[in-house]
Image 1 (cartoon, rainbow, N blue to C red):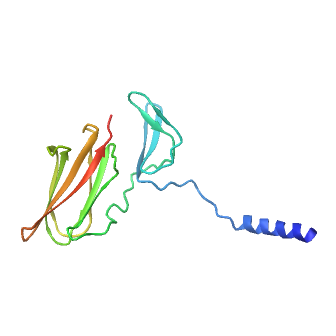
Image 2 (cartoon, rainbow, N blue to C red; image 1 turned 135 degrees about the vertical axis):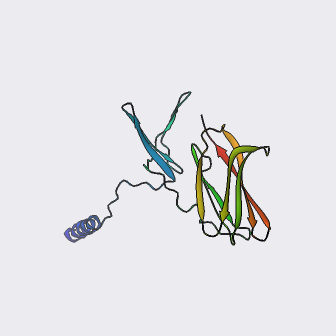
Length: 173
């Protein structure tokens, strides 16, 4: 019996001596910390384990994990198809929408935001594309909550056009 208790104690000590230590770390898509008028707020955007949500007419507060800085990693870590790669993040977006693209050759890129019935909205981006992954963001807080289409029209130097589109959703108060 003493041998059994001794073995259990040795095992317990051995496990506790080699246990991993975790620091409070959260891996999330984005977040921020704001302080004004003696009140501070930090929040996380993206996947989180929500504990509870409180809301009134102007504020929605969801308790959960927090991350203090915007981090957009892996936005274009999708397999590139024959027409290129195009990704948006986060969906739904609140405040800032990130998007990125990558193509197989050089050309011109025209990015447009359309409402759900196809009307072109105010936002657009035109640039020359040479190579690599390009990531952009824009402030979508002035747009009404709802569904939109972000469209990338890529024109190669030989004149061939490729259009990639993604449905996005904005949640703005």
